[in-house]
Each structure stands twice: as C-alpha cells, then as structure tokens.
Length: 237
Image (cartoon, helix red, strand yellow):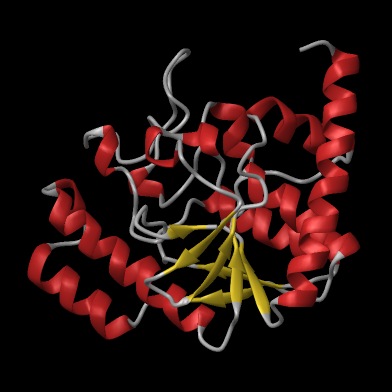
C-alpha cells in the first residue's frame, strides 16, 4: 500500500473507531477496556483517553510480566494522566499451583499451561468484568489462525456480556502507522522482534517471516495458542 493510500485508509479507520467507541460507551455503560499494553491496546488507550474517557481501562497483572511492560504501564499512565486498574491472581491459587506443579510447570503440558493462564488471567478477568455490560479488546484477525474469523462484536458466553473487537480489521501496518503518527508510547520489546507480548516466560522474539504469534507459547501447536480469555465459541453479531 502506498503511503498516501495508507494515510487515507487510516484516517477513515480512525474516524470509524472513534464513532464505534463512542457508541459502545453510550449504549453499553458501564463498559471496560482490557489493556495488555500491546501495540494494538496502546492505539485504543490513546483514543479512549483522548476522545472517549468514560470507558474504564483495566489490566491483568499476572505477576510474571516482562519488566518492559511495567515500564510502559508507568509511562502510559503519566502520558495520559489516567490510572489503569490492575487485577491480580488469587494468591492462594498461585501458591497451590506452584506447590503442586512447580513455578514453570506450564512448559510440561498444554493442560498445566492453560491452568496457569486460568489462574493468572481468566479468573481475574471475571472479577474485572463483574457488573459490566460489555468489554473491549485489541484483538485483530491478522494476529493468528485462532483469530481469523474474528468479528467486530460477539456475545461472550463465558462472561455473559457483549464483547467488542473494534480493531478486528486493522492491519499491522495500520496499527504502527497510527503509533508513529500520534507518537503513542509502546513496549520497547516490539523493537526487539516481539510482536506479541504476554508473560515473560511464555514470550520470545520471532525470526523474520514467522507468524506474529509464533513467540507466544512457542512449544505448543498453533491451534492451542490461546489463554482462555478469548474463546471461539462466542456468538457473533
């Protein structure tokens, strides 16, 4: 895509995004945005803080995030003068898991990895969404084969509320064009070939040509590479 074409497309998508977020905030209040501080989430944080501040922003602090992610959290809160509410895993559950299986048992099997994800992400998410009518994510179709059918809006059966993916049709090029144009802060690991960033022990850099989610749970098959926050059986609208 030429620079001029990209600029025009991005301008249209930004306008659509602002209108969509405004509609969601008005029709589904109270609504929350789940911010994991990836590149996509920083696009959403920038627009929400500047244009739709009534949308609450929260983050799931698993206790095993990279230092660079915490640095970005601090920088983003200072930049936007906004406090991101953090949700932590239940310490009893973490203690039981580590005592029974070890601190890095998620490498041993998909089942143990998903159990760790449930404790550190899924259960805290349920608490974060309690009392909300909808939540917003930074998911995109282009991110992985588990997300290729992603829609703008879907009913989240697991959490019993509406889920919106307003960047579902954005490309990686458009995300980074937005970040550059508006000088949006981002995770420094992106500059070290980490396109997708999760917990430190479950994330690594990727090689040229690899899928952008190849660095997440790299020891597993691609079809199992989700943590349980985003299930595909949701009903699309």
